[in-house]
Every structure is written in C-alpha cells, then in structure tokens.
Length: 179
Image (cartoon, rainbow, N blue to C red; front, side):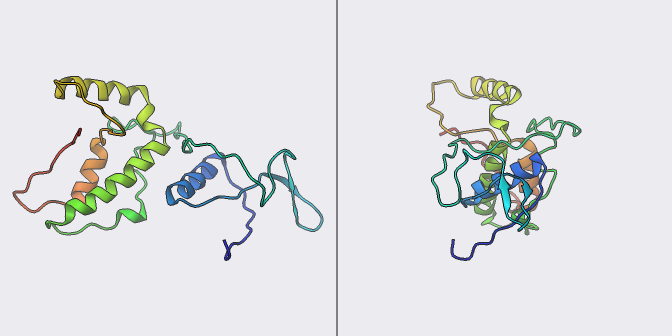
C-alpha cells in the first residue's frame, strides 16, 4: 500500500456495505475506522478505543458482507432481491457484442460476477431461493449428487447476460450444469 491515501467520508449504512462488498469482491484490504468527530487539528477521534489502530492486527470476519435490501423496492421474482440484482447496471457488464462463438466465455465471467453479487446480498440463503433450489433438484436429479457452491443463476441474470452476449444463430445455450 505504498500509494495509499487517507480519506474521510460520510456514508449511510447501505453505502458502507456497498463499499465493503466492492473491496471484498476486488480482493482489496479496507483499513477503515469509524469516527464520531474531528479534533481541533482535523484528526479523527475514534468511537471505540478497543478497535485496532492502523498497523495493528484486526480480526475480520470470514463471511462476506451482506448488502441490505432496499425496503422501498419491489422484490424480483427471479433473484428474490430488492431491487433486482440487474437493476443497477454495472460497468463490468459492458455494452455487449454481436453473436459469436466466444461469447460463452464472456458470459461465464459475467455469471461469476453476478454470483458474487448475489452471494454478497445474501440471496443464496433466502428461504424463497432455497425452496426453489430444492424443487429444481428433486425434479431434475434422480440420483444423489454432491453439490458444492452450485447455485441456480436467476432468470433475470441469464436473460440480461444472454441478451448482451448471445450465441450465434442455431447454437443452443448450455443451461445449468450440476456437476
């Protein structure tokens, strides 16, 4: 962190959660302190003296940050998020491209990023999603499968990413792979 800066900004809880999720997604370390006021010299004072200071070891949770839903938004019937995970277009999503053979690799990268966003929003642990996954598993899988980190990508994500990075005409989409 040789080129680091110290910034003081005022955030809402939702904004802080978004920044923490962004840093976690990017694999960056966020060295943040909560302050309640500034001293005469402009140095922030700490809310809690038991928090580690810059340079000290801090205990971080292994759990990813959960971005809270917006209670004013309507719930998506596909991803069960408020608002839909596709509602705010991300820069990494790009503008799309014409149908071509390599789009499947582009889509795979975009699906991974949406998986991370959904994970950070707690979508994979919502009761509605768990019920949907159990119904899909019982319908599609006759034998027992060991499923680890396999989740069903919501239709809202599939439709958006496939519309931006479509297959060539006549080439079907692979669908969900359980193994």
